[in-house]
Amino acid sequence: MPTLDIWGRSIPYVLVRNPRSSNVRMTLTPDGLRVSAPTHLPDAQIERAVLSKERWLLRHHDRLVPHPPSPLTDGDMLPFLGGEVELGVREAGRPGITFHPEEGRLAIATRRPDDVRDLVERAYRDAARHWFRTACAVEAIRMGVTPGTIGVRDPTTRWGSCSARGALGFSWRLMMAPLRVAEYVVVHELAHLERMDHSPAFWAIVARHRPDHAADSAWLKDHGHWLARSPGHGPRPAGP
Image (cartoon, rainbow, N blue to C red; front, side, top):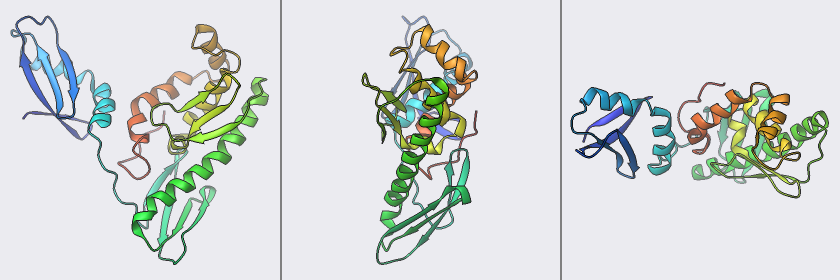
């Protein structure tokens, strides 16, 4: 089966020639990519059409064909708000976590190597609770709004939420994103306290407080598949 090489990833595909087709159509399945193209269209033109959708392909391919994360081990460098923290793992009878992101250190104590990822996630969740509460408090004053409760959850496609009662929710995985991206999501959800829609009026509020919000939103669209795979899976994408 032929493959497409995109950003170091090989995506298998099947090319189907359809005399009734007028353009190139692409469908992703768990087995890879199915491309339907007109009979007369040259192969090179078909490949250009497919490659023009490389970002879409990567996002959706990762959801349909997940790749198991690599084990987290002593000395690994993990992303944290645009920087990195060094993971230290030592054997101990009782599990423990010591996280100092400002010093670039995350220490895990456990006697079960299989528990390291769960403990790392717990450390990130705790850090996210503190960071989002602080960030929301600062931005809310600047924006002149009053949020309700602020929680941390684990959605992998919806990075923030705002309820009708003003309760805000954020994905802890945003701690792996660049700082600007996490700040943008905070402003986005706080803006919903004024407008509970995505109308032009809503985006005007966001733009007033985050003039470069389009770049932050684009980063999430391009790299959300990477955030969803948790710490330690693949190289860290560049910031916006």
